[in-house]
Image 1: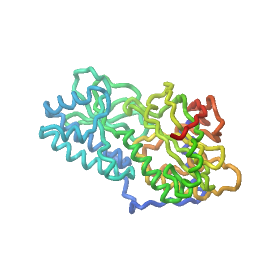
Image 2: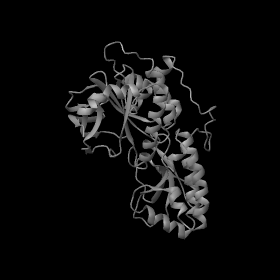
Image 3: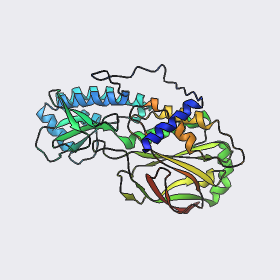
Image 4: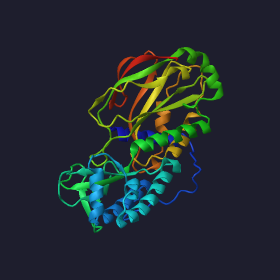
Length: 377
């Protein structure tokens, strides 16, 4: 069974448990459709609209040259900022369309306006080719075999998702690192509002850890990490990985901390971040669990926080540690996005004394840990 299938199987647990998840976003809007009636996510629809607009704008030779120079480095460039700084008529028209698409993306991901513009453009495909470029977005389904790309006349072309094309392709996507950073803040804020302890501790938790903090505290530090599969195709580029660390706080209530891994871009590569994963001064028991996920674009962090809170707040401290991986995974509602936030792997019952290499339960990820003492200043 693949990791994706394992996740989808686990999602059934939420419904079977009778957990009802509500949001404050108002009535659910009908999912947008594409030609043929197939449903797409709101984020994918916004990306597609921006891609079509960008493709049309590239009919202007001067603007096309500006775009080419801006994305030549191979890194994602903010699409709204790129259009705003140009003086061409084509860019001005594009800026209006991109601003509207950015608003739709933020709303769909449960992010506030201060998250800013999230749409980016990146050069992929045959970068050095002199052939006319196409504009595409990553498919909303990771298992899709085809990608739709547009030319300057608005004509659609089909590209193979598994094979890098022999033409330059401008890929419209989401600034994943920026989205995860903003999303984690939403996740922590809404978990705290629902009553789940997070990285922003309560007054009681602050008082309880004051003595410990005065001298220092033990942590579990990631000295190396490697993934077999980061769930990304050629068109999506780097992965956007984050981890949900859960356990019981000092007050005996479930606690969730989020950790982002902006460096963890490629599968099959070992990274040496020396990154702190667990601060043990915040936990009652000497055990915690980790669920690693990859944001595939459509993750609604507000809805995710509400779902996790609804599941975890039903778990009481009975005087012994209860693993929390399964409740966290079960709480991720597949209906909240089309391009699922991929379950990457999970680590059960990490202890403060855990050192050395630990493979994830799904055999997709591998951490190497050491114990690290953080001294007070």
